[in-house]
Length: 351
Image (cartoon, rainbow, N blue to C red; front, side):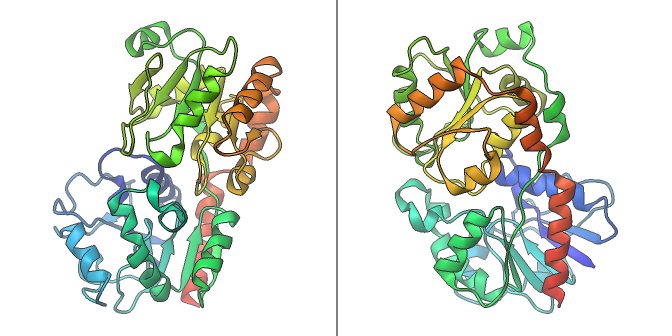
């Protein structure tokens, strides 16, 4: 197959969807299919770093104007930007109109429908764009069965909805706690609780802070991630190193006493999986999707319940789960397996 993928999420800082696009493309590049990466941006192919063997075909085009056109029209077809292909995989909610290719779209979550007050204007536009994507698609991919169920209920699509879980970078399994020099650089205490994510309303950092205050003798909080948007919360007393990735992020997570993710909604919950791979205990919202990822080794609390999170955190700090059990849960999620699931979805689209 000649498969073209929307690699726009590779540009700029790579949060969850950027990591998904990067890791998926790298895993697919180890197979036999012909891969093409494109990006919807004025920069065109500039700044688009892809694995060896992946072609880059991109023309300068304003993403915002393209989305506005695609929300109303079936023009321009994506092949004008990506070149001819058998499959076009829209990795980030929006499947453009197609000339001859079959379309596959990844819908990561439905927060833009279910938690409208927590998303930015760019995500709010998905309320108009995603229904058109669903109609254009031959297959819809979601990162979890929980989101697949939500998509079927919301859109009742005429095409298959295929859950394909993400994987975890093997480097997380060998991550070591931060060195003294990195701790000094980031201002890390010797013991701490870590949160990883954009400081946005959907992540419910307010509940995290309240739970921390209710937990006696809890080590300090380290909030890793960009500032985000929405109502500002008072993070006085927390360590806020900002956005981290690569070895620095892995070291900060690996050195934590626990990772907490109090989200109101998630499409997958990659920070949970990464922490488990590093052998770090996790306290997370009791959401179906996070139970898919964390299984029985994660300590759960009701979303928005500060007292519940405080009790769960106290339990983890007093009786941490076995590191081997945490790593074993993460072992079931690999990018090779995820790539195989995506290839199967592409072949299904062709049929």
